[in-house]
Image (spheres, helix red, strand yellow):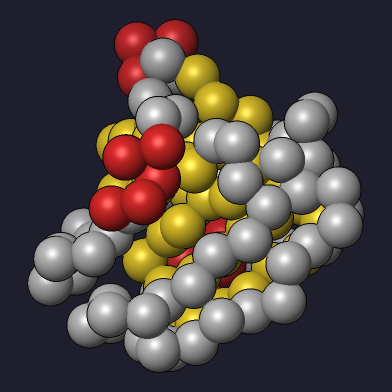
Length: 127
């Protein structure tokens, strides 16, 4: 599924995996060497994360029920435990550099759509 910053129109991830079971959320990105530039992982439900055992930095968006970005973290290094975010119901993990590339920040709204429902440029400023 696509992850789209509705505020800017930028595609955050064209291939977003939805981790909605306990085991899928528990595994998360562990064991992965990296995320492809167009990949994302949506942890749902989720209000906090860690990067213990990970081998690469990630960008992280903490979202409320409606997809509002409550907190945006850039380049969270491996072996970190960011503070939980009050009101967060979902977390979107993205390749490091995605938030800088798209301009996504706190207060933006993220939506998810089936890949067939939208054809978006990687960044609206590059069109």
